[in-house]
Image (tube, rainbow, N blue to C red):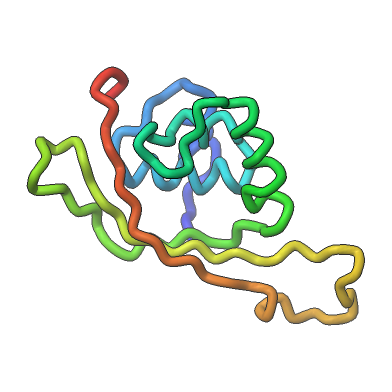
Length: 138
C-alpha cells in the first residue's frame, strides 16, 4: 500500500494538469482511474494498438461502465512485481511491467450479509502490460 495521497499521486494526471512521466506512473494512474471509475482517463491512456481499444468512445465508455468490472468488483490493491523492462528492439518508447491487481467481488442483494469473510470473494489478476510512449504527447 502506498502512503502517497490521491491528490499527490494520480489526481493531477486525471485532471490533465500533468502528464505521466513513466510507464509506472501510467500504470498507477490507470489503476486509480479504475478505482474511481474515471473512464475518460482509461480511454485516454489506452494505446490504439491494444486489444481493448475501441474507435467508438461512447460505446467503449458504456462497455467499461457496465461490463468493465466497475459494477462487479472493487479494486483492492495494485502490486507492481518488477521494475519496468525496456524493449531492446525499440528506442526507449516501449516498456513492460509485471503487476498484480487484487479484486473483491461486489456483494449483490442475494449475497449472504452475515458472512464477514471477504477473502473468499477476492481474486488476483496477474499481468504483464506493454506501455508505449505516444511521441506526440510524450
